[in-house]
Length: 71
Image 1: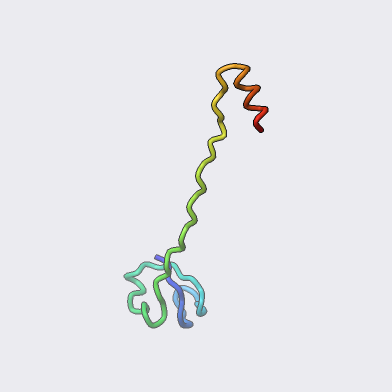
Image 2: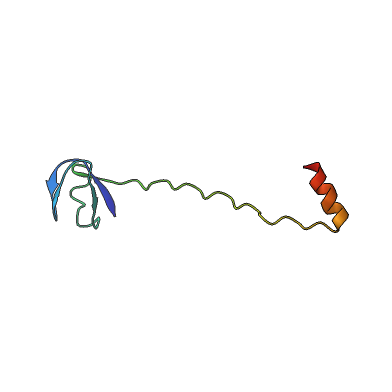
């Protein structure tokens, strides 16, 4: 689980305030609240909707010609 360091401490290495620390919650439970806080999951942007690139084919040449004139 990811934690945000609030106060300097030495764990498996020295941690400064603002650092991220990954650790098992049961191993650092005594530090939560005073030295560490649970990191909030970052919001992910939704993927844009796919564009339909395929256009329906005209039934005949006349329909194709009239469609091109309208543009």
